Length: 250
Image (spheres, helix red, strand yellow):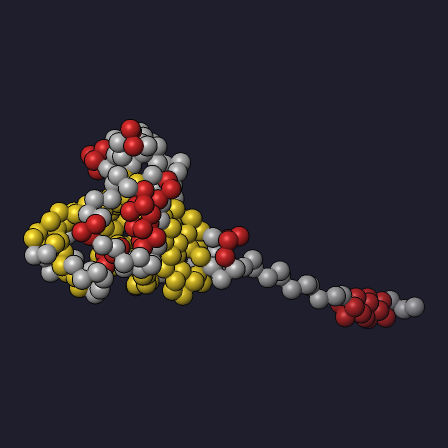
């Protein structure tokens, strides 16, 4: 082989190797983005069959036909569960508790919640048994005032709902007090909603007339003070279960 053909042979070998070289593999796909979370606010408001709550005015009528006013409304909400279509395995639970006063703006930062589609919320109106023990909550003025007497079982009031009603035309006081674990209402509010990563407000609407309505028509003249009666508190427990609706607001 002559010297003149060596460069041509070398060039041909290089071209052949280049032609046979496999293409570099495509870079791996980037990992999917991490699930985002929604910054959500909880807000609770109160109404009587659509009429905004106003204090100290005998202007509402309950299911039994009694005109009444509201002078006090205090309660707790705890163990909030965001319910999915497949229910219990992947519920998001917000333990609380949240103290609610009808005279205040009741708004709470829930922080970041998982994005997803939900079918509603469930919660207890009051305190779960592990919280409902004398001295279990911080000694704030609100918690101290909601204490349930130790001789009557201890723990805390779940709700104080008080006012006046017209009993044959005579203004008469009433006090719908709930307490003790046997009388803890579990409330459900069904509504499809989606947390998509944007700021939103989970609004709970408490219809106070439901406390007197369903499934029991509550008679104030014969049950104006519930605290000493497990039977009366059982009626209130059942009625409170249906007292809330909800929606998601931007």
